[in-house]
Image (tube, rainbow, N blue to C red; front, side, top):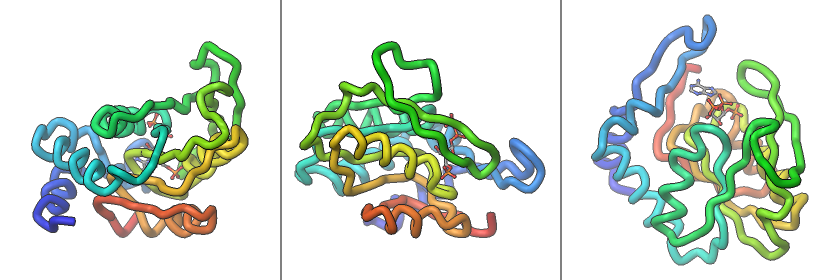
Length: 181
Ligand SMILES: O=P(O)(O)OC[C@H]1O[C@H](OP(=O)(O)OP(=O)(O)O)[C@H](O)[C@@H]1O
Ligand SMILES: Nc1ncnc2[nH]cnc12
């Protein structure tokens, strides 16, 4: 990938120390989105990487996974499936609990949103411990979907998420990394 484009993306992301609690270095992807060039570049790079790969659906995880997963799905001409926090999806759902860098949560998916044979790309803004995407992958695989790849704007390598997802058999792509978390 073009190094100047990747630098533009990384430099657009602001860091907020001690948010949402002391000791967390919060990597704020909303500052990337406020920069039209960086936002478009991030989607364009993902489109170039994932086009013509045979994916049938993109799954994005609430909330920030929606912000990158949906535009990528439109650009690739694929359906977008939201994985949401509990009680937000109106049809029958499956649920999976998971651990965050700072807390516990549960995610849900519509039971009829993934069919056996779907080849799914999972998208989120940021990879930390990998707990969110681990739970998301379980939800998709339980419905018979095949998940081979996960894409992120930001990876926090010190938190071990990439290895966790490699252990699940995924190929992992991130557009930038921040160390020291
Ligand atoms: O790799 P992990 O340790 O699971 O952490 C990464 C997840 O944490 C953040 O979401 P958060 O749960 O804060 O929800 P939000 O997008 O609704 O703010 C981020 O957007 C990822 O989804
Ligand atoms: N350090 C961090 N910055 C932004 N979002 C996060 N989600 C989990 N850890 C995070």
